[in-house]
Length: 498
Picture (cartoon, helix red, strand yellow):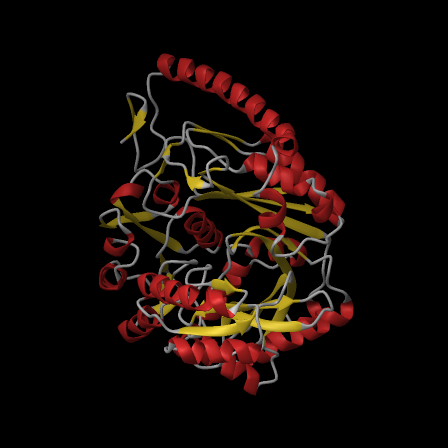
């Protein structure tokens, strides 16, 4: 069993891993940048180490420093969380060579699935249906245009090394192709240090359905059913749920069988996710594999009762899966909302500042995974996601009702948030009846007319008033306080953490 795990991440996912370590009686070691010295994950961990300056390149992406730290503090293993280095095959290979255990898949599997064109070829050879398109990078403009005309417009240009919507362009005609091709290559080069582009048929108004898989090093594979991640903005997921109301038993069988085939194709172990596009006729197309823990993993935990982080750690220790496929059932319904620090009235630009108040919702069926608390700083350096609210209900409507109630109770001051926007989405007919697709937010939310947005704006104003009142009360309490030590790492001095 591991004695110490270095958590090579920050924010809510670092907190999530630290809590799993505590339950397993494993020492947790956090690393942090200058910008994160007052962060929640730093104070919750058993040990915490400054890794570098605020920019990610000097801290959370510094492979040499992270591995050196792991060896210096005698960490048995490194958990990468999601993002940053979690899918960096070079980092994983360096960890493997260092003698420290990587809590995740092998570098070989990540290499096989990391390049989107190679992954498409691999999936095609293992009977996993792929979106019609190229299976090799396109470097030449005229070659790309010829391929696009062969596939048939509209098409999607995508970065071979990409993800998160970067390097992606929709092209509806030959006249648009040249400009879109140059733009996609340029963005891909900046984001991923590679300008390799491939072309797919653009599937109009599909659902984005993904399957959680998990496997051990002994060759045992299981799926944990599907999640619907179709509520997206700029190709970033905003609301996820499990199971999908769109998926019937026959479609679930096809999706999960394809997902297991995909995992076996790259000899995968640990937790991973196979993502699919599903059109209105329920045709299934492989999209990509995420070779890590997903942001939305809590909804799967809610409907199965499986702790995915603990399972990840156990698998990395060499143990078999703690369950078999036949042991798993779907219990109820779960929804996750991602709470971002952003200005929804100003093109969703990130909002920065110090968290002045953080009062989480609670009650039956509500879970909040957070990386913030009062006096946390939301900086320009990292993704603006603050927390995740997860609801569970005996059925989908109960999960929705609980989520709307929870978001109404959530109070965050110091930065702007998207909470009111989340509440608006949850109340829309398309969301309530499950007919939404990946273009729902772009079509229905972004072009909002004032009257449609007024009710949730009014909620936001009322919330701001109550937050202000709470802040004034808290400030009065702090002024009368003689100070209190909140943890071994932090002291309360003159109204701030040191």
